[in-house]
Image 1 (cartoon, helix red, strand yellow):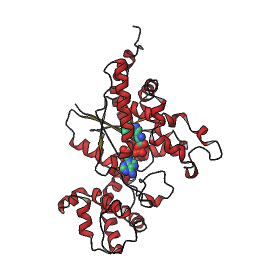
Image 2 (cartoon, rainbow, N blue to C red):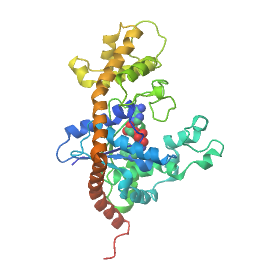
Image 3 (cartoon, helix red, strand yellow):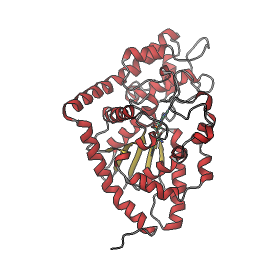
Image 4 (cartoon, rainbow, N blue to C red):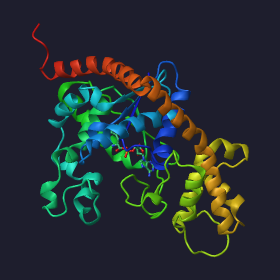
Length: 359
Ligand code: TYM
């Protein structure tokens, strides 16, 4: 049977990179799953604290993320939704994997290397700029991929749906599982990656960079709770290019234009299907002769309309939470279901390593 696991950092309300690269795929997998498939989706707060977090903000963002997962269509009766820190086995398995993870491999990981070089325009939560930057980087940030591997391997996950920026971490997880199995027997399942069609959504301000939560400029991303007006404004000032003439789909030559077309296409895939449009290129063709001042509102309209029901559900969920502590219930229930899978798996792993109980 299939077992699907993925995680998202508690960054508050997700942006369209998270949504198109991951969340929408999660919902699709959930809705198309056979009865024998288990789906687990975790808010990875232990990963979030690898950079400094303000405690009350983090608390708030964990709730906002859970509400967002529900708002996009994840259903707690079909998927197990929980906070990583509520299932202690993640941290415990991480230690065992740490003792089998090579420092060399970890130091070659892209995310770590980018932190090493990122000093001048680092986020305010990173190491203080005045200190010796390398020395100040935290151990948890270095071992981040080991915790991610623990998340995945703890549940015998077969499939991990993520955006492209996470595929290196899943590859690392596979290597770690294979190495571990070689030493201790066939216990861990090397997982496969599932990439969504919109695997890399770009920044609205710097279309050669991915859309991200950590970019300083809020205009570089659209949140799933943005209203039609906010979406219009952000699209209006999105960076495109000064090419005269037709709208064309050329991701290499015109990354800003291609990014907006991609976003619009993937936001409303069913609408596109109804219009007989099978690819972003075909959507671009229908817009070919629009002037920029007409084209951008057309893009914003597709995005805004697709977000409206999500935003409404988000408000409803928050209201329900105020009335009956709904999010707390969903989290608790998810965590106990996750634990029921994690516990026996971890016990087997400990037994195999010589840490079984004496009785
Ligand atoms: P995170 O929280 O940065 O992102 C969550 C998901 O969103 C995807 N994503 C994007 N996809 C396309 N375009 C973008 N611009 C974009 N930005 C983000 C990410 O690929 C991801 O799928 N380390 C992970 C969280 C994690 C995890 C796990 C994932 C922890 N443990 C186990 C899978 C399995 C992360 O920081 O994702």
